Length: 520
Image (cartoon, rainbow, N blue to C red; front, top):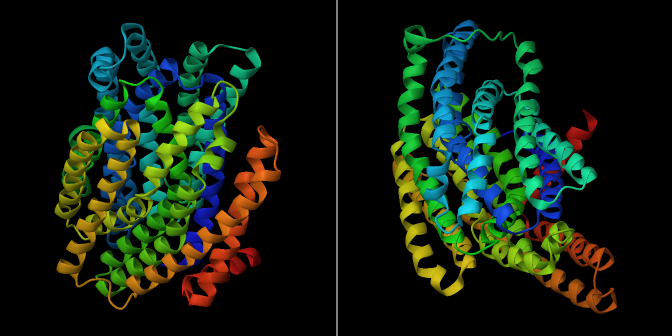
C-alpha cells in the first residue's frame, strides 16, 4: 500500500472530522441531550441506516472493484457507461425507497423507538420526512466517490464529507444567531442535513469532469443489460445481507436506548467522537488499501493483494491501538472539552464519556473490518463478510440483552464494541484459511510492540493528568482545555518515542511519507 496516499487521505479526512466535531459541538450546545435531541438522532438514523445499505456500504464495496475491472479491461468509455447505468438504477430504486420512507415515517419511528412518548414520536416522524431525501443524495455521492477512488483520485472524495459538515455548520450558526429553542433547533438541523448532503455530492463534480465523465443516466433494460450492473447486483445482494446484520445491531441498540431520555444522544455523541480516529485512520487506510486490492485482483496478483493487506493491517494497529487506549484513558476530559457547552451539561458529558470508554474497546476491530471486508468482495468471495456480520449481529444482540440490565446504556456501547471485535476475528481467521494469511507481514509482532508503546503512553498521560489537575481552575474552558490537550500531546510524544525504541517500522514509514508530502 502506498503510505503517502494513506497519509494524505488521513489529512483530508482529518479536516472533515474536525469540521464534524464542530458540527456536533453546535448541535450539543443548541439542542442538548433531551427528548428533542433523541428524536433527531432517531430520525436521522433512519436514512443513515439505509445509507449504509445503498450507499457507503454495500454499493461502494460492490461498485469499486467492478468499475476498476471495467476500466482496466474494457476501457474508460465502457467504465463510464457502467457508472451511468448505475446512476439510473440508483435514481429509480433509492428514489422509490425515499418515497416509501416519507409515507411510512410514523411506523418506522414506532419500530425504532418504542420508548418514545406520543409527542416525541410525532416529532421524530416529522424530522424523518425532512431528512429522507438525504439518502438519495449520499447514494449518488457514493457512486461518484467509487469512480474517483477506483481511479486513485482520493482527494475530492475525502473532502466531500467536509462540505456536508460545512453546510450543517452554516445552518447551525443561523440557528444560534436567531436564538431558537431546542425543538426548533432540531428542525433547523434537519434542514441543514439536506443542505450538507447536496454540497457533498456537488463538490465531486469537477474531479469527475476532469476525468472525462459526463452524467447521462441510463434507465430500464438498457441499464440492466450491462454485465457490470449484474455483478454489482450480485455482490450487493450478499453485502446487503451482511450489512443488514449491522443495521439489526443499531436497531436493537436504539430500541433499548429509547427507554432512557438522553441515552440515544449520549451514545450517538460518544460514537461520533470515536469515529474521529476511525475515520481519520481506519477509513483512510481502508480506502487506499481497497483501491490497491481491487487493482491487484484485476491484474491477477494475489501476492500483491496479501502484501497490500499486510501493510494496511500493520498501519491500522500502529495508529488505532494508541488512539483507542488514549480515548479510554482520557474519555472524560475529552468529552468535557468537546461537548460540555450550552444546553449540554456536565451530567450529559459524564454519561457520554462513560459510553466512549466502552465504544473505544472495539476501535481496532472496527478499523480492521473496514480493511478486510472489502478485500473479500474484491476477490468475489462475499460469503465470508456476510458470515462475519451475522456473527457480529448475534453477538451484539446477546451481549446487549445480557449487559443492558446491569450497565444500562453503557452495556449497549460495550456490546457493540465486542461484536465488532468478533466480526474482525471471523474475517481474519477466514482469510488465513482460504488465502494463506498475509505472507510475512509480521502483524502479531508489530501489534505486540504497539501495545507496549501504548502502555508507556498511558503512564505518561496519567502522570501529566495527575500533575496538572490540582493547579487548574475548578471548572470552565480554562480547566477543560489543558486537562485534555496537554496529556494528549505528552502521550503522543511518549508513544512515538517508545515506538522508535521498540523498532516499529511504521513510524519511519509515516515520517517518510509526511516528508514527501511536504516536498510536493
